[in-house]
Amino acid sequence: MARPEVPLSAKRGSPLSDFPLALHLKRGATEALHQQLTTQIRAAVLNGTLPAGLRLPGSRLLAHSLGVTRGVVAEAYATLVADGTLAAEVGSGTRVPAGAARRERAVAGAPAWFVDPPAAPFEFADDRQGIHFKTGVATTATLDAKVWRQAWAHAARQDVSGDYADPQGEPALRAALAAFVGRSRGLPVTAQNVMVTAGTLQALNLIVKAILPPGSRVLMENPGYRAGRQVLLDAGLAVHPLPLDEDGPVITPDTPPARMVYVTPSHQFPLGVRMSLPRRLQLLEWAEKNDALIIEDDYDGEFRYGAAPLPPLASLDTSGRVLYLGTLSKVLTPAVRTGFLTAPPALMPALVRARTLMDSGHPLPLQHALTYLMTHSEVDRHIRRSRRWHAQVREALTQELAPLEPSAKLGGIEAGLHVCLHLTEPHRAEDVAAQLAERHIIVSTVAEYSAGGQAPNALLLGYGGLTVSEAVQGAREIRAVLTGR
Image (cartoon, rainbow, N blue to C red; front, side):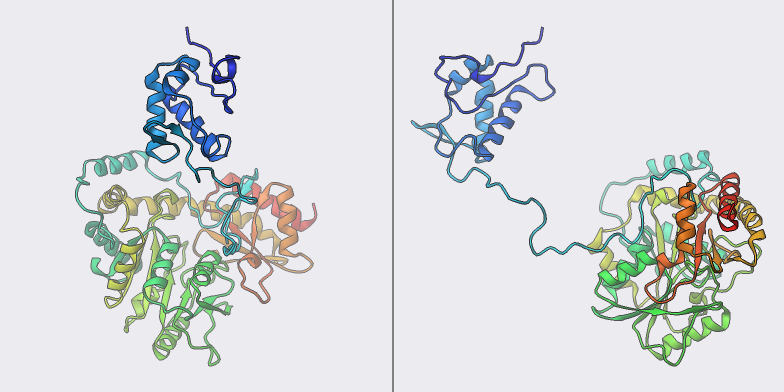
């Protein structure tokens, strides 16, 4: 039978009855008896219950009072003396040393000089119940579970002993990624031009740290990718808005010079327009004239529906101006948190140095698993399945919303994983979003991605994470709100 707790103060009239601390040890607990005693005495010293100079009971006396062996007390005392909580001197016993108590703070928290950062530019999770038209996600329903297990079994068989991973990425994966963008996007690169990253935001952080001097001016589409904008702002860069029209970012003689411009030409985020070929050539000419770099974020270029792909900016680049960003998080699953960038050879050493100092490279088992999927053509097969799935969801969504024209018009439907629903008066996107939330349909507005100025009056409908039935149900609720039903 387990012995009950024996408080030190329980034995009235003992030599320890005036000791200012009641100790409670419990046999059979997960924590050993000497650890319980150590924890309780340390806490009492730190909070001042046991004041400086106080002499603690001898180990034999304390052990007898607690009903434990002397070894339990001796081990606890030894631990506390070793870490400075107690002091032991020959002939003076064990005492609480001066300065051991921790002064209580009136307010616990950050240092006085710390400035709270702005709110996160996106929601990591939304626990509201209902149908979420969330952007930036693709379905995982088409991921072959058997092949996925095979990839991880392959990774488990690889040798991971030795040094850290190559900060640029494992050569085999980089070669597979180079071949992938070559056949899917017509981008002629080699493994030496590729770096494996933990996604777009890390790629942006690397570029900023490695290449851009502090205070540099950067142009960015407006409205645009708000998390990306925040990365640039947090780095101390001067971010200037780049206006958009139906052909993409607008470059005029009044466009200010800048060190870098960030664009999403294949499927502009969030409006969904595609940058026309003349506009792409104009941007490249502007970059060369201003000695500027271009970040081309091709975040969902694999998903096209009947529209012929336009060549990436990087494939038109003849002067080493474009850094191309791609992702496997949307192609496969966000769980892999993996992307890649391609860069001109002159810039890669600086990027590798920045990655070495940031985290020394991507996890090896994950790289091995992804290499297996890519070299066995499983990624290509998955993309074809995923594209068919999303095409069906997109078709169902657009058919349900088509009757709303001309009071509401869809944009950006040729590619990607989201569409824009442009509204006309008297409908205001913010009001419509609020009414939909009451019906448990969660949407965002384009204004949420604007850095100022007049934002398009439009809803942003991400359908990548929805089934056909969810897309239809959500679209019918949108129609009901806009038609007053």
